Image (cartoon, rainbow, N blue to C red; front, side, top):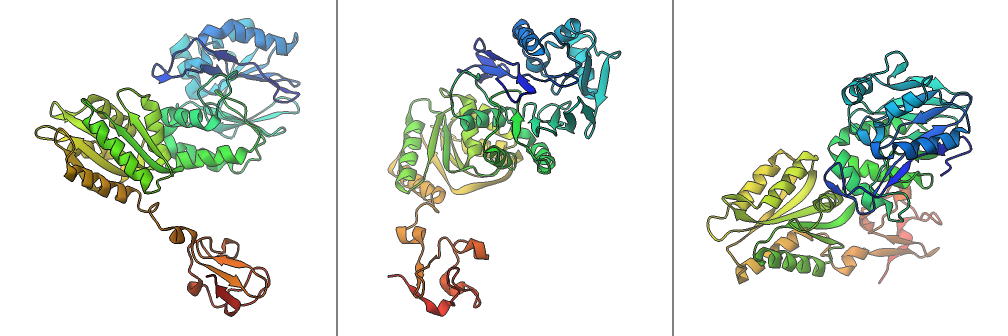
Length: 447
């Protein structure tokens, strides 16, 4: 892969791995990315997983064309990126290792060497010249380890983003970026939204043409799309309208309840209902959906006086990853002394800005007609804004009798400071037709 005439890709694909970080299912493998800048001086960015050291070294040597590298830039010390530091340093004894102070401490811990005689310790704001290329180092602590540095190369406007903007999946597999990047983000980085927001603030002052992450594809088109998603994810905003339903069911009765709820939500116009059986489905997918949508329903049984284990693990994962700013509905089932709702709410107490629905559904063994009515009521609470009449969704329109311009109350006139939903009669007296400039008195309500 060629990034530019001077910046080359030397990473590897891993189709041997089954669980990334020992927990995330990766059916399409992983990519461990590494890069090299060829200039008057040569800089290599990060290494790869230990199992691919020789393949990586061969990729590097092919790009060096007989030259020797001057620097190894270590941005992140997780072993899938750092395990071949010793191999590199033994192969190229004149090269200097460039990393943060914390990274050198971790090198000693992981590999027994900290290269005190051949290193440059960098911090946020430091630079390193290679000739035509200049490396500008950006502190990125806790995205998602404390030693992380990112690097901006100013001549070609390339951001080497460490684990930021990464995703699951090898590079020789064609798949949608957002799905596996979202699952990667919320599973691995999600807790550190404040730190990502700080980084995005720093990056907003940079002209970026290419993003080179340590996992996933190089990004060089429509960068605003990727950056906007990261802004939404890291600010815990709602990415997509819809409801995620996460459930466990022992004998099928709780499952019947959530299936009924899903049907009711769809009938009310909910644009997306995502169901996850926590005992059978990938829990990281369920976690991703919980963060993607603005509303979540948790449905489970009381189990040994507590919560069914898979639900307990899921709520713990939500809290651990900083779940917040969401509406949550509860369905509990218990043949005697149901306590799951109380327990689930208590576990979510550490999550910020959680609003519980007024309706909590309590099933005793199997659904009754009363439960079915409660589920309909819960669906109405969750799908309120989707359950509008067609005319409400479209808004009322007024037509300019001079030029034919239509003012749509649902859309407003944002170019002139009129927000969506502004009724015609509430328009300022000095508002005029954006096309011909006449006043409100020249408009007629569309029949």
